[in-house]
Picture 1 (cartoon, one colour):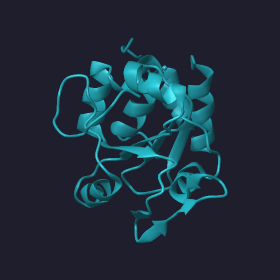
Picture 2 (cartoon, helix red, strand yellow; picture 1 turned 90 degrees about the vertical axis):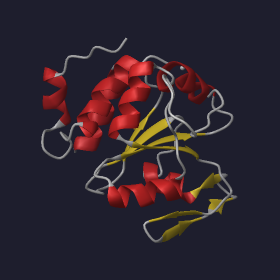
Picture 3 (cartoon, rainbow, N blue to C red; picture 1 turned 120 degrees about the horizontal axis):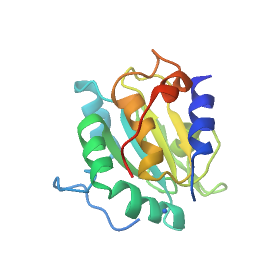
Length: 179
C-alpha cells in the first residue's frame, strides 16, 4: 500500500528533464554512481538503501533527469551521503547478479529481466528504484522527477521513515527546500 501511495503522491507533483556519467570521484553536483555488484557488497556492510536510476540510452527524459535532477548539488550530495547509488541501463545485455540470482537479457522484450523484477513488470523510463535498507521489496517510482519532486522521496527513505510512517502522513508534514 505504501508503494502505491508513494507513486500517486509523487506523480501528482511531476513536471515532464543523461549527460555522460562516471562514478569515479566525488564532486559537487555529481552523484557517485557505482555498479550493481559493488552496491550489493556495500549493502551488506552499510545500513543504507540502494537507489537505482533505471534508464535507457534512447530515453530523452532520462537524459534531462541526469542534467537537471542528478546534477543538482543538493540532490547529488544527499544521494551520495544517504544512499548506495546505482545507474543501470534497463536494456543491458550483460547478465546481472543480485542476491544470488542471475538476470539475463530478454531479446523478445529487449530488456534485462532485472529491470522487470525491479519494476514488477511496469517498465517506464526513467524510473527511480529504491531498495530499502531492510532489503524489503524494491520501490519503483516511474517518471521524471525534478529536484523539488524527488526531495520528499529521498528524505522519506534516506532518513528511515519508510516502513514506520505511511508516506501520505509523512508528505503532509513535509516541507521541501530544494528548487
